Length: 115
Length: 114
Image 1 (tube, rainbow over the protein chains, first blue to last red):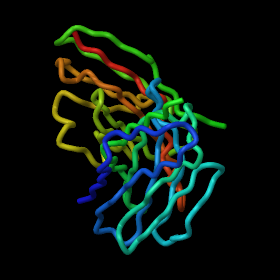
Image 2: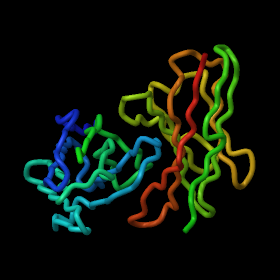
Image 3: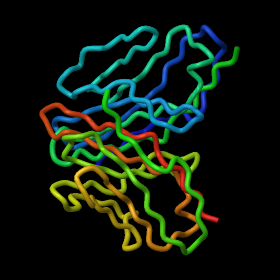
């Protein structure tokens, strides 16, 4: 069975602060995908990143960066210099890379960026 | 860029009524999914569909749910007799079925059961 844990339910930061959202996962698959999605108040799921389990390189995209540590089964997400528009619920998710690839989501972290 | 579309964006129904949620996956995609998100909770897998049959379903997907691909473009989720607890956002997703592919999610349909 697959499991994704996001221990932080809600985080509040002041604009321009850096913030890290934690994600820990469990899977028996040897190859798998990890994801981060943003869900703004409008409700849609905005895809942010997919990481393959065999690629442990960290990734940076603008103010966003991701730290994948296979040894600790973690896939953390950092927003640098947060902005009010970053306020949303962020979901970490996991799927196998084979088979039907259903996605297992974490419970989400609600980020509030205060101006 | 191709997108998964869902209609309607918001559906209100009375308890006990049947509802059909519609999705148009991305053309040429082979795998289709429905997920559900009760307000304030996580997104949960309901069912996957491939080659015109259900390939996997969760325990949530009981006999009151059914899925269908009635033609070459639509993918529907039917709830036979809605309950209050079916109120949720329903997301459709599709993926091409190629190496290193990924699922593309639609914008969701918010279902409100009164």
